[in-house]
Structures are given as C-alpha cells and as structure tokens.
Image (cartoon, rainbow, N blue to C red):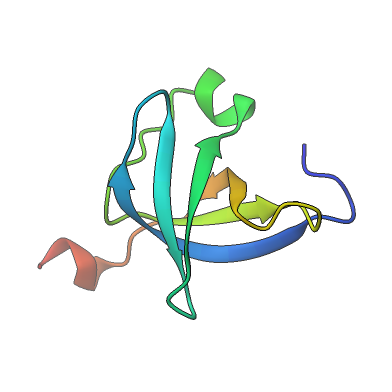
Length: 80
C-alpha cells in the first residue's frame, strides 16, 4: 500500500526489464523504472508495453516507483 506522502502519476509502460521491472514514461516525457506492487503480483495482473498504469513515487527517490494499478485500455487503443 502506498504511503500517504507518496506521489501518484499516470504513466505509459515503454519497456519490460528483468525481475518484474518496467521502464515507464510520465506525461512530461520523463522516463523512470517501476516495479510491480505485491497486490498486483498476487492477482496475476498482466502488464505489457503499451499499457497505461498508475505509479506511486516516493518523494525521497524520484528515479523509481511502484506500479499500483493498471488502467483499462480504451476501445480506440484496441484498433491500433
């Protein structure tokens, strides 16, 4: 569970890295590493490049975050 002082951002998964890590791109074009939260691992949520996610970032380390939610894809993204 994210801490109350963590920052939440919407991001796009760009690349899959090893050991359940991903490279995500924030709205401003900034890229960072993100790991999958334990809740998503337990529910076997699939995350792949192209998915939109919500990440939680600690204010003490802005270079990495935790993926806490995968957002549903819109119907226009399925057609491309």
